Image (cartoon, rainbow, N blue to C red; front, side, top):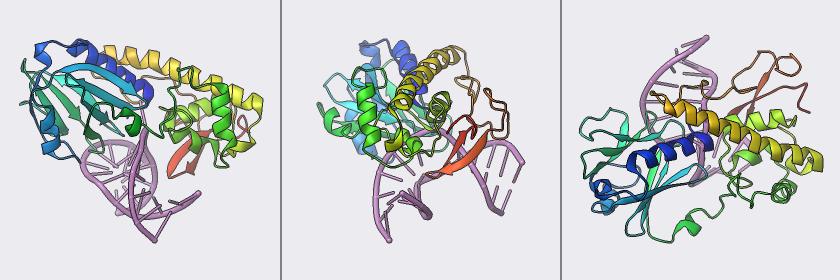
Length: 268
DNA sequence: TCGATCCTGTAG
DNA sequence: CTACAGGATCGA
């Protein structure tokens, strides 16, 4: 389910549960299957302490006390939590690490598309080669977005989804940002004018910023995020409903095998 | 660049 | 039953 704002909320919640720079209780003492990686690889984390939780794009990084780290990607339906006991796990738990204090870090993922992998110290550069800048980093500038847009003729929505121009946008927030910037999702990226790109740049940060605020609140309540409840979407999932700006009907169109929602009147 | 694929669940 | 799902990769 998660795009960057939800992944960030997961990271914060994990940090709070483990207390960043975690004590002896954060030692990993056992692990269960994690796929598609082998259990063997997961076993390399046993005996290590989790010292920090980082996020890069939609990836979560569990730092270990020897410099190695676990990379978790939640894909569509994953959630990473600290559970009271690894022995009492739901059938949808695809991976788990038992901690010394009896709790467990658990990947709960009904659809089982989520991924975990183990990595050596210093391998972030290679691992994230091809991943674009964080949307709130200085590296994500208007010039950067412009450069990325001018370099391709593919539809702007697909460019935003690729994680290369900027990290962290998914199907919802890409559509929302394009709506806010009044850009048609199928518009070839290289054709976007400077003012349109500036509007998109602002919209990306606006949309993600607002979503982060509400994702955090949603996470403060028990039950985690409920679909559509954590963020007031303007277009996503609203096919046939009135556009909030012009009252015309929101449309859905396939793009790259996914559904894109947009207002044909407001987004040219 | 497209479609298939990974998986399971849910809505129509 | 089919369509679709807040993602990403792979091979044709």
